[in-house]
Length: 155
Image (tube, rainbow, N blue to C red; front, side, top):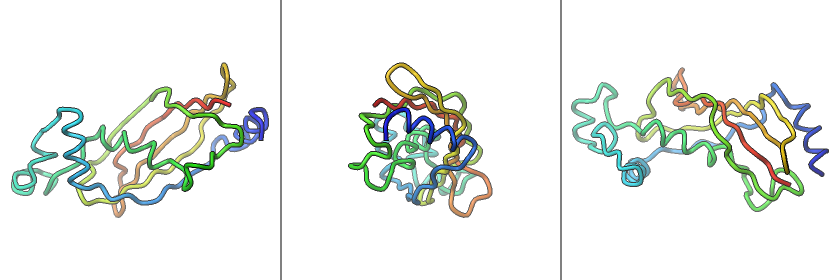
């Protein structure tokens, strides 16, 4: 499928849900590693005993930005060696137009992403996609993250 064919195909999907990912368990090890990488060691994330005793969330929670940073993984294809679009050389994150964290993601929770394609435009060397992404928390009425992500696809 050429870039032109991919563009036409994606235009037909605007406004539709195009991906529902697999569930991923958010572990304390993930939270601790993220805290080390970002130097954000706030107790509500990394001090399990204190979070269990004092937190209004009844235990440690993932950083909001950890949840956001999981989006590329949560939206990846099952087989990363086979690109979603023939001829695709690479896809890159271009930015985020909007981000909100409606409810905290508790450690031990399972999350997954739902993606709705909002727009697709041709850009220099490729395509620009804007997608509404919802990171659901299993068993929760509210999502852990909602984001409007901008991606570039290069062919």
